[in-house]
Image 1: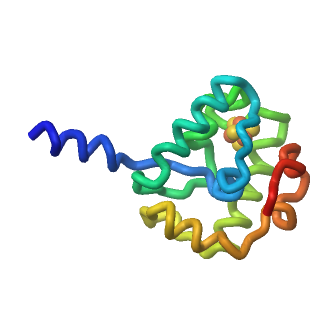
Image 2: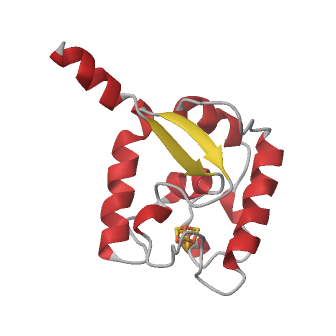
Length: 130
Ligand code: SF4
């Protein structure tokens, strides 16, 4: 019975903002605050065990971001711009928002998208290696 409960916790769902599929591949331990970075590593640790739903709104990575006020408030129009960016990625990678994915399948869907070409004016782009 104990083992069964563990399995349920182990495979819990994860909401992931679409463009974070590119950020995750290029994460170098930098971010908006120490808590943000700690949470990021924690998300990376759970990634391959989760059932993932892709969203165009705040997610598990935004959860500990100082700019997250229920929507992205990094700048005045950040949420709108970020949603458009998420939507572009969702369309390009042919991601189904009603589907639950494993990370390995999502990696396949975005493998042809190069962050340095796709992400327009992201402040972290110089850290990206793909
Ligand atoms: S800046 Fe905005 S989109 Fe990026 S992690 Fe923070 S809340 Fe999320």
